[in-house]
Length: 262
Image 1 (tube, rainbow, N blue to C red):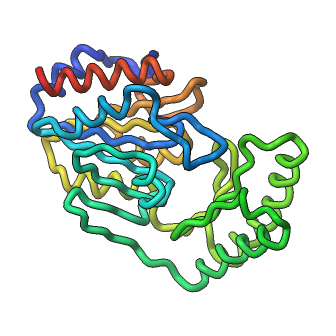
Image 2 (tube, rainbow, N blue to C red):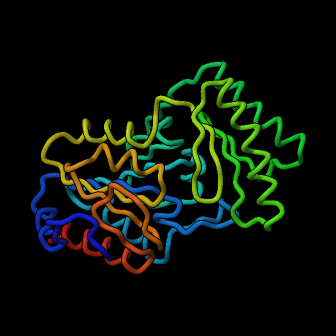
């Protein structure tokens, strides 16, 4: 555990959390709550975290919000707790409220055609299992492949995805173990902006994330809350605090839970 900004104190943070009228924990999923695995449908939270998150979600004056690059269906299929949780999927293009209300923001035919062109390339090359298509994005994954397959995926996807980005007006992003094309206009930062608007002033907020896609959320939160980088190795970030999973992450969530209960 290491502070990346001066002037912070965990004791003071959790004392203020206890006193706040509303306590809001926002977190990414893959790489943050769950380790990366080759078979993405088996990405279960680290041991003990589901129970901790259940206690946090059902506490008084408390909200738990997940913001992920996964689709909502994907996430609800592998992450299950009984208490209501607000979920933002596909980097903010989908939202599932605690009341069960669902919202999906539309994309244009041009964007859809560009995404389909990558899927068609993967189908012709026999690479479908390495490609993940979502409502407003398409990703190529090479985590867990051997060096020859990884080099092929990296090189060939760079060409086809660059062409699709240029022709379809999509954004090309790198992430740990892959490359993704995304429709512009929404990201995790946009989702956090809406959350901040919903909870209003006086809410005590923390955002947990591991990847570069979480930097949009960190930047939106700014001084409004505590920004926590969760990963085994440090990197350039706007976060305030760096935690190594799972032990330091579990301890942080235990202290969060305890502060809710007083």
